[in-house]
Amino acid sequence: SVGISFDTGIVSPAYIVLSMNDILNSRYANYLLRSRIMVDQYLINSKSVGSIQRNIYWPALKRASVPVPPREEQDQIVCFLDWKVSSINKLISNYRRQIVLLEEMKQRKIDESVVKGMRKSALIRNHDVRWDIDYPEHWQIRRIRESFSFRKGLSITKANLVETGIAVISYGQIHSKKNSGVSLNEELIRYVNESYLTTNRSCLVEKGDFIFADTSEDVTGCGNCAYIDWDDTIFAGYHSIIAHPDGSTNNKYLAYLFKSPTWRYQIRKKVNGVKVYSITQKMLKDAFILIPPDDEQKEIVRY
Image (tube, rainbow, N blue to C red; front, side, top):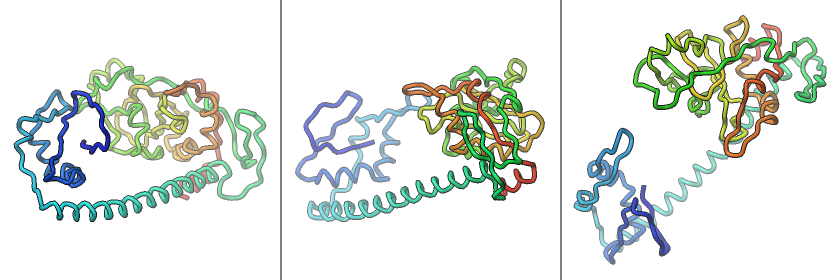
């Protein structure tokens, strides 16, 4: 990480401060120090500290050679890169806005489909103030506690994770952007020691189960879960709640329902916290779910 300062100030001892002389345009130096060649130099001239940290070794790095064009060329390079980087940033900004709009559209489609169905059936009203919605009159509505049992995941920390062993999914993987919530992604898998198979079998999940995060750093993440559609041996990890459905192992309709803002409203309005929001088993047990006929569930999932 590197930055250019346009102000006078103080930094902590964790930083290395380079002062420019008249030979270098400081903005050219700013681009130069971010270049691929310099990143390689940082790796070469650094030392490992523990398993995840590297410290730059300044006595070696200061001997690295850098290209220094004439000042006029430096100025031209800076003008070109300022223009090019600005135009690329505008493209990135436009794509990000498109992604936000597409995400909103996706959420609307999921919400409409899992709550109202695909067949434009006559609607009736659920008058419980905790989930006051219209839904197809031939669908069932019930509390989750009537169709699910709940238990906690492993009481472990990141320090208990190992390179290989038994698969586990914890809080971090549930909130990961790689978690679609409707299909298990192999990249979400971490591992714990096989000894947990003897001591914590109740924390294992089965195909068709859901693993909910029991905390979230924002209201949007309240209700996030991982849907287990694998037959493999998998543990629910730290800060997680296992929701085990009675009967069926094909619960993909429910996986989409749990992504619905209309369903999540039940959880979001009950959570409390400042920096971290807690999701309890009671909140989940008290929430309502909709149960369409099997053929309509499959139709919604396909759509």
